[in-house]
Image 1 (cartoon, rainbow, N blue to C red):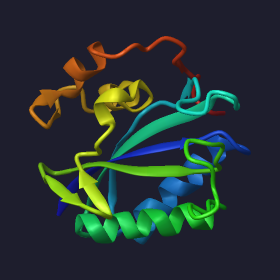
Image 2: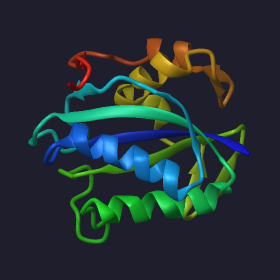
Image 3: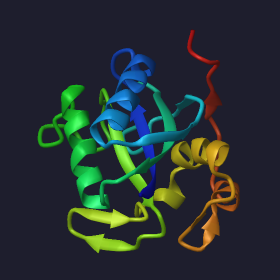
Image 4: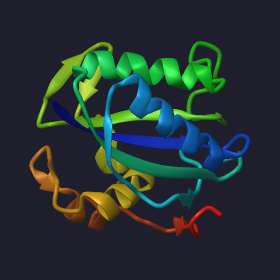
Length: 163
């Protein structure tokens, strides 16, 4: 079994409901056990800043899938929720974005998969929810707790639990 960290994001539609349903799909389609789920966070857009704020969260799962099979399944789930990676604007609006952040201590550098996620340490919108669920997890030699201290968290707001 592998321990995986997955970041969720979106800014189109009822994102919090999409997260709820997507997490159910992740667990079902990857034969995974949900170990932890962060709160949802409203975050400023990144890259293309002329769009609605995003909602972001992270989950930790235990799965029997290898990293490539897990990523393939995450992309299938995104598509199920209306994402078309081939036709979208980079860093633009989307219903659901699922990023595989880390898988155990795997270091993979291939055209279709890089682990840990190559931009993890630049992205407060991933580090803040990760710090909530796995603050002491070491990724690429540093703890999530320390990594979040090195980025600006301006504009990131923890949302109340969904009703």
